[in-house]
Length: 94
Image (tube, rainbow, N blue to C red; front, side, top):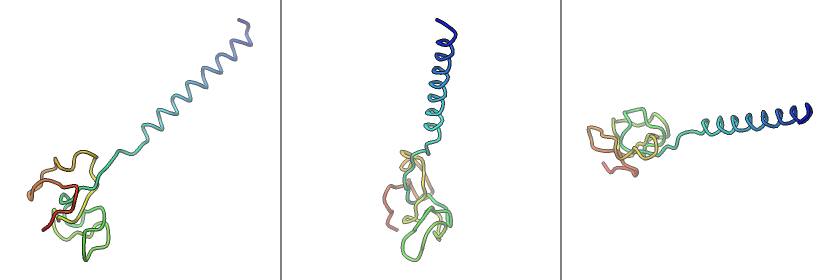
């Protein structure tokens, strides 16, 4: 193999390596999957709408309000224990 082929091969391998590194960085940058979990937010710490009389984030009026939700890591909602019971994937009737 002559010097020109060696240089071309080196550049090709470097380009492949940087492409793999870039793909790994993009995969690592993906946001974690989340789910809406009702009944686990403290008063004023919900992520969005909490039923009648509220508009959006931070408007829940009571700890663990059943119609207020908070984003939690996917698959963990129903395992979260509060003084009022477990979290729920659907609004909790009060």
